[in-house]
Structures are given as C-alpha cells and as structure tokens.
Length: 512
Image (cartoon, rainbow, N blue to C red; front, side):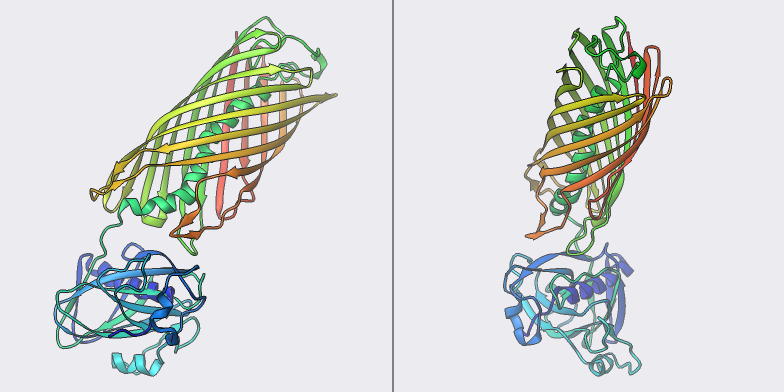
C-alpha cells in the first residue's frame, strides 16, 4: 500500500537510526519480533539533498509531497532486507527538529523521490509509539514535541530490499547524527544491511563546492601571490636600502637588488596554509587540513627598469574530509616564468604565468583512487611604493586567473568518472605600511579579495552558501643585510563564512 511521505529530516533520522543498527554489527543486525532500539552515526547512513515541490511536508499531502521541485530537504537513508514476510514498523524517538519518514521498496533515488515510495508519515502520537513498542514509559521528542516523531509500518516480502528515509518537515532545516529509532517486526526476524560503501564519485559534488575552491586559493592563487609579493616587496630596490639612500630611477638589478651592480637574484619561499570548512546544514562540506607551498626563483636584470625570471614550486595538500569520512592528498609541481617592469619612480608592473601537473589521492571506505590534474594560472599586478621619512607605503592591484583540469578516472567500485574543469578568477587590492629601522622593516597590511568566478557551488541542485569576498590582515617583518634579504609574515583570511585560511610564510633572497 502507498501512504503519505514526510520531510527529509525525519527520513534522515530514521535512516540514521537504521544505520545505527548496522553500526552495531557492522554488517548485519538481526531484529526479533520484540522492539529493538538503535543509534546510528554518519558513517552508517547515506546523507544527501533532495528537491521537493513544497516548503513543508504534511501527511495530508501524501505522495504528492515527493514530487520534484525547488525546495531543498536534507535526508538520510538506510536499507534492509527482511528474512520473513510480515508487517514491520519503524519509529523515531528523538530528533532536534520535526521530522518525517518514508519507506521505499528498493533503493531511493533523490532525482525521482516518489519512485518506490510505500508509506509516508509526518507525526505520530506518543501513545501510539508507546503501544507499538509495548513500553508505556517510552520517551519521544522530535523538534520539542512528543507527538512530532514519525512512525511507518508496511507489509514487506522476505528477501526483497527496502529503504527507510528520514527528512525534515520544513525545507532547509538541518539535523546531525547520531539519531535514535526503533524497529519491530512480525513473527520472525529481518536483517539490516549495512549501506554500501560511499562511492568515490558521489564525493565530487561536495568536493567541487568547498574543497576545490579553497584548495585553488591555497595553491595556484597563493603561488601567484607569492611571486607578486617577492617582486613588489623583497624585490623592490628601494626597500633594500632604506629611505636615507633612495635615489629615484636607480638601476633595478634583480628582484631583491639594491643599488649595487649585481644583476642576478635567487630566492626561496616556504609557506603553510591551514584551511577548513565548517558548513553542515543543507549539505555537509566539512573538512580540515594543511597546504604546503615551496617555491624558488632566479631572475636577471636585463636593464635598469626590466627584470625577467623563472620560478619552480612544489605543493602538497593534506585534508581530512569529514563529509565522507575520508581524506584527500594532492601533490603538484609548478613552473612559472615572470617579468617585472619599472614604469617610473613609483609604479611597477608584473606579469606571471604558471603551469602545474600533479595527482590527487582520494581515500574513502570503498578504497583509494588516484586522479591526475593539470593547473595553470596567469597574473597581472600593478604595484606602487612611496616613502615618507622612514615610513614605506605600498599598494598592489592584482588580477589572477586559475584553472584546474581534473582527468577521468575509475573509482574503487569500478565506475568510470568523467573529469571536470574548475576555474577561478580573483581580483585583489592590498595596502601595506612598513617602518625602516636600520635593516629591519616591520610592517602591517590589509588585502581585499573578490572571487569574480569559481567552481560550481551546487550539490544535487542545491546552492551551498559561500562568500566571494574576503579581507586578509597581515603582519610581518623584512630583514636586510648586505646581499641577503629575508621576510617572515602571518595572515588570516576573514569574511568567508564557514571557512578558514591562516597562512605562515617565510622568504629568503640573495643577490649576486
């Protein structure tokens, strides 16, 4: 028989509870005729987003609640196979929000949420829960009320697969695992099958929203910014001498050159970014990890106002992806030629292009796969430097474009996954104030950045909120000693909701 359907949160809670049964036995859990109570965690339930045609899911709406629409609902599902044909009942006992529950014959397809639906329920009275479980003292609370927890019951056939879904009554509501539910059957037993291991391809949508964008900022964008900083800061000929010895229009003989005759300059830079994402509402995109960048460069002063050079870099990203209980490790090698032209005593123009190859190791419960990638970036930067006594004022306006091409691969279950291209374009405006103190220059700065374009932020048709703008304060110090120059800085990106990017960076330059 087919009854109504409920919101996704209830379905998610039920699914989590069913998954809890799975977690108790890790493979199967036998449930006898008496009532059994289970608790599940996120590792045992399949969680996602479905789009329905109503902002709330009522019993009165019946199966019409499950028609595809534009309202996002978070859900969780778990499957089971009964060992005997009988009437089985599933009920939820606890949830932070008002939930709904749906029972499906076969698997659940979020692209067609009505297909296979057997029973739907929004609310069930406390007395019915207590009667079904034969426990008059049973405590039930979903969304603050004892009568808001769902319960579904249906005749099932031995040996066939069924899926229980829990979702929310209101669109946009969120829920977290673990959750609790109960299950009771007829005269016999049935087994709860552990949900199949997460297919790696299912991760791509979530990865494209949060992970891809933040990794692009911490690798290709940061690599371009690093070279810009070397050109406009350590590479500024006036910065290396201090205000007392500034001669406007003097020769520029290397990125970090001063007034000497040296035309060559070598430099190295090392940085570590701590990045994370904490979003876990309509979808779970949580992760946390580090991105390490090592870049070295060599340049030559062709003329007093022109420098050319090339840099070589290596980056490694190590991230724990909580949204799928997995991890992601990227390794890439980059080469980037650059050019810097001194327009006049105040302004200089820098141009950079970069190319990188690498691979990603994606680890999930289903196993590990490796996906190759290619990256490229280009950057234009206009810098301005002005001195007033011992104070140095620096401004930078940059446009950076980056592209990452992910190649095709086969996941751990043998499914062919198509590659994709992620692009990002960012504009940056930064201002910095430094104070010259006989070879030392402490400084503070602030950079505004805006992502003009970036990778898709849609998971199952639901747009995940994220911020395009950020403000990044920085504090650091430059040190100059004859032909050797160094710098140390710390910055922390602000303004991007649910995300973090803290950066520690050190540079060293030598002209000869």
